[in-house]
Length: 136
Image (tube, rainbow, N blue to C red):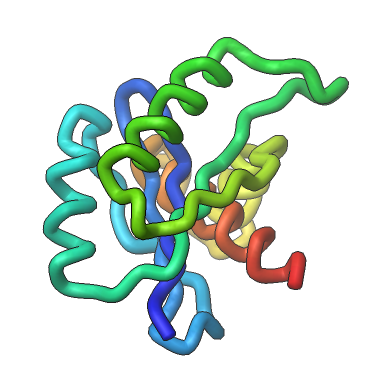
């Protein structure tokens, strides 16, 4: 069994989370600058078997697309073309940034650390991954 990884895609940064090999535990992995995403993924996939990429799908409260919907659809297509052997799954990412920020507060992180947008993206990816895993 391979890992699952989740991407909280953004035009500047992409948060990444992963499971263990048994797909039991989701944890934040890192945040990469989006232009470096595919280089990171190629290296990661060379080291780990991955069964699926879980990609956060941005939506408004009413289910309508957001300003980031088209870039996410484009990155999904590029992921499918580049890593055709790996399944791409979409998961609603509404509220993940707010949930990530609240998680940071609840865990006692200082105000300065909570301003770290890269950490918010990584935690958001972890929430996306946990949401996907809970859907089974």
